[in-house]
Amino acid sequence: MEKVIILLAIGYAIGFYIRGRRATADLAQAGQQIAERNARLQSLDRQIAGRDTELSSLRRRISTLETQAADQKKDAERRRQYFQDNDLSNTQNQLHFISQCSLRAVRPVNKEAV
Image (cartoon, rainbow, N blue to C red; front, side, top):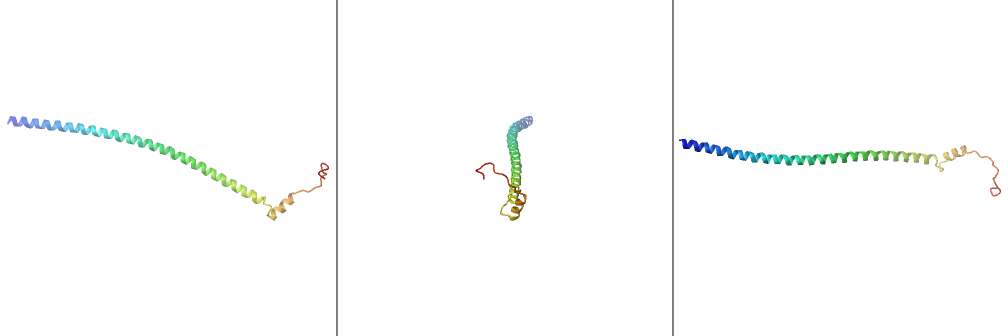
């Protein structure tokens, strides 16, 4: 009976030893997987930071372009208004320009001017 108990104890000890080795191997493998995932997360964080920088740069570019478009629109409106105010084909403008003129006789400066 003692031999059976000793053999059972040895069997249990071998079982615990094997389970301990497997647990150690599983723990090492889990640690390696965690390290790989952390490396991937760091890589993704760097990519996100790069994309955020790119996005903020694009937002600044959009803001600049919107400002330029607004300025161009104002310039176009100003040019259109100037053209409309100085259009000589419009008879009202012609009358307005003539009313602003002052005609007076001035002696010529030299003989060629006469």
